[in-house]
Length: 135
Image (tube, rainbow, N blue to C red):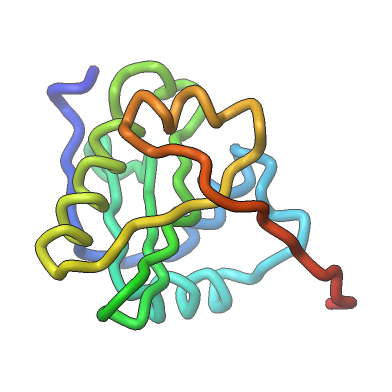
């Protein structure tokens, strides 16, 4: 399956594809609209998308000032496509883009994903914190 995957920094023409991916991952608890997801992607410093034909099967984004730090976020692969190397390829492309621009890649993840990101060279360095807001 991996051979048929096309990776591109070109966003999808229809951002309904992003909404479908987010919902397949259980990520749309904020009920983001297609328009909000489009704005989210287009305002990212860098984003890479994985397509199988016309189907969006994965994506990763970086939020950055383009100078010092880039926060990797929104890394996800559609459940039927997981464990096939797509997430790793997305991450390698994100890291390469950061390195090319001398931006330090950082990410926050849930604890059970730490071992996965460690295999990609990441190491724990800080405690993340969040404040809940009403949306």
